Amino acid sequence: MALVGLNEILMDAAKKGYAVGAFGGSDMISAMSAIQAAEAKKTPLILLEEFSLVFRDDRSLELHFAALNAMAERASIPVATILDHGTCYEDCLKAIRWGCTSVMFDGSSLPMEENIRITKEVVRAAHAAGVSVEGEIGHVGGDEGGATLGGLAADASAYSSPKEAEYFAKETGVDALAVAIGTVHGTFKGTPKLDIERLKAIRSAVGDLPLVLHGGSGLPEAEFKKAVTNGINKINIFTSTEKSGAACTKELFAKEDQYVVTFDQIARDAVRAMQRDIETHIEIFETPSIGV
Ligand SMILES: [Zn+2]
Image (cartoon, rainbow, N blue to C red; front, side):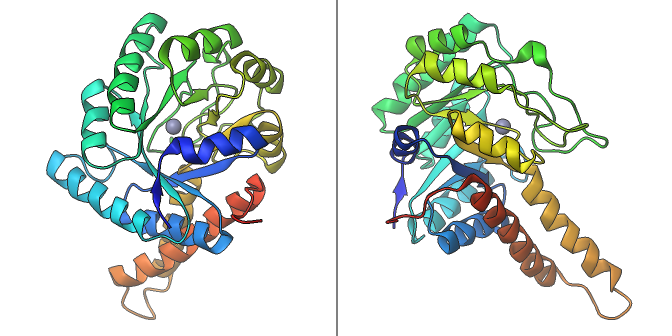
């Protein structure tokens, strides 16, 4: 089908009240798993591209982004590619130059006015290039790109306030807004529970602006459903998928006394396991199939 902007996918989701999953593209194997899962389910896909996980230098990142965009262009479903957690204006610009159809600027750990100032600059540059922007207000803490042993609990003092969300959205002109309502990046400590009343208040404060939930891995099915019913339109899943890929690797090595384990076997099994994990999430989110 086509490489599309985040806007194209999320405007319909916000209007009709459903959510689309955003899954990891930190390497080609996870990107392939995500594309195959969305193709099997016939749903749109948001592919997360990262700056600081597997690839770190500009040359590798540029090649990686080009490869992911080429994969997305050839998918049979619409795919939006997004720089996940861009931490500065320059990184967002690089991602735009390297073909991302959307960028997230994460200024959530900055003071509010500083977050607004930089987000606005990113929006101005991105919109001039036809690229969508996701901002974040409040702070989804945790271990981005990792999984702290024992897990982490959400910090209620950093949850998004409906008033701030409304102000931030109006000032910056973002196309989507990530909010903190009870999730963490990485692994949860204990059973997570979302602040649904807060989500409802944010939804009514920002009108039909698409809302984003980060740190969704490990959230109980019922909480996901409540999040979608009450206004979340994009759900980021990373840790759960990466853990499922790693788990099957462990199973392969457990049989090392029976055969020689090679990387192609690891990659093949990991694609299957990660695709399964992503398909399960798409089913929980109840993302409508295209043309249905
Ligand atoms: Zn995130």
